[in-house]
Length: 336
View 1 (tube, helix red, strand yellow):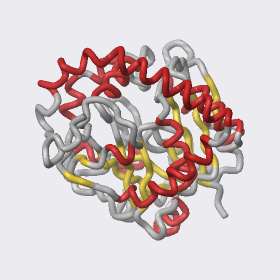
View 2 (cartoon, rainbow, N blue to C red):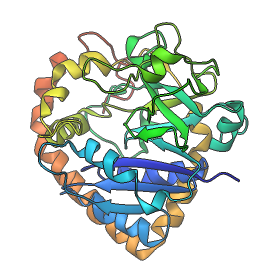
View 3 (tube, rainbow, N blue to C red):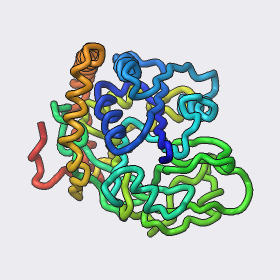
């Protein structure tokens, strides 16, 4: 059986990291490698506790001057022993959840459906704030089920499951970088080939192309549930954390225009809900471990305190909340 690994770079993601990690173990990733830098919310301690169970590998790092946290992770992870012997890899952020539609909904089913491809680019399914101003007690994947349509330009962005071969020259957050040479078998979310222009193309910032051509986005084989907003208090914390692709972690990326781009709640999608009972059982099992329970409680308390600090700022966001998108229908149904 192939060894399938997951990579992530995080900072101050709060207690949600427990849900994220256990969900991806549930859907079939054999090992998870998480790098963190500069955490002040206890999430690094929670990851340490999960690492103590052997469920993931957690590494703290300090990006060198002039290099963004995510670029620093991309450089280090290429030689990380936690990925030794891995056959497949995917890089997901803490607000991204892989949902597989092929087969029984596991990563191995996705690989089988890719029909021998070396890389499979799956499109974002972006979820809005769900009408929530403040974070509730439910899971992220339960609390936010309304998002944007497939034809929205932001749905063209992908995350890539790829085979680790000598053709991999480097990692990037959306897809790998390939060595020069012939095209590889790279497929989109419908299982159709993505050609040379996508495989080797670059964006204006010289990062590898991460959006499929217009009209090529598809959720047929799977999708990346992307929760970039969550409740407004979480969005405000994201602003404080800053941009992980910027060497200075500048917060400007998360200005109110970010809400214009991502805060759409026009379509409901509950595909991931099929795994919620098993996910809750896995979380209960993890929290039965004293070290995990203590770390989770400490992280939850710190997170609540941080959200209370930003709560007074929510009122200023309300007029900016739905300038392009809108609330779920019926409006206000979950507007706590």
